[in-house]
Image 1 (tube, helix red, strand yellow):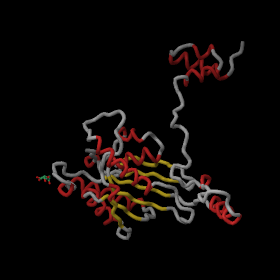
Image 2: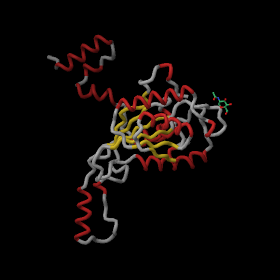
Image 3: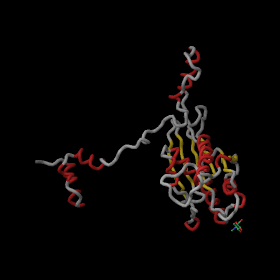
Image 4: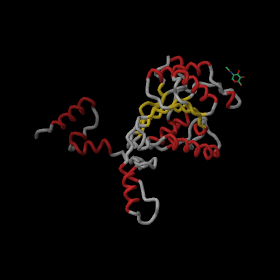
Length: 278
Ligand SMILES: *[C@@H]1O[C@H](CO)[C@@H](O)[C@H](O)[C@H]1NC(C)=O
């Protein structure tokens, strides 16, 4: 009997590593199956193409009844008008802040927090991307962080947004950690943070000509929730991600509405002694 090349390879591997001998007795397909039998495809595995309700394919007759010829042509025209630009969302967590402050206005950046924000401002300037705007959560630590970054990007339009304030997005799974807000917090904050997601995360309009680069200066829970939602991971997984202070997270939304996580919580541009997460 002559062994196929693959079987000889598997035999060789088996001899070297001492793992179970079943591989060379079965045919190659079965051997491969045996590596994957414990894997059941997730019900979440399928990408929802119309997640932002902007897929041209899903444009529908909203008038009810049969369309006139001209309305039908208009609808078909709209379906043909596909987005061409990328939307890049660059999410910055605020810097380290004074946790002893009794209210938001007292929870200001520490000296280290300001240094972290400076590193990140410098980094964004060095990346030299054609930024579109910077939008800051209205909490003081995000405002301060955003102001420091703006000093490095002086011509960039600035906006503020209450929807980006920190909060409790959804009860995390598994429910771990010391972070256990009351259930009503999830009920109140969750829909507000989801509203922020819907506001900023969507494919480009068909008439957007150039790629856009939007900087959002906000908070760890908000960013982690956004990342899970954008990638169509279960939102309850958000607490499994960890983000350093003043870190950079970058999600790109392609013209066809796919979401790509390019960077998560990067602080490689800071000296190690500056890196903190809580
Ligand atoms: C932090 O905030 C508390 C309460 O407002 C204040 O007493 C303390 O001095 C602050 N610490 C620093 C380093 O600013």
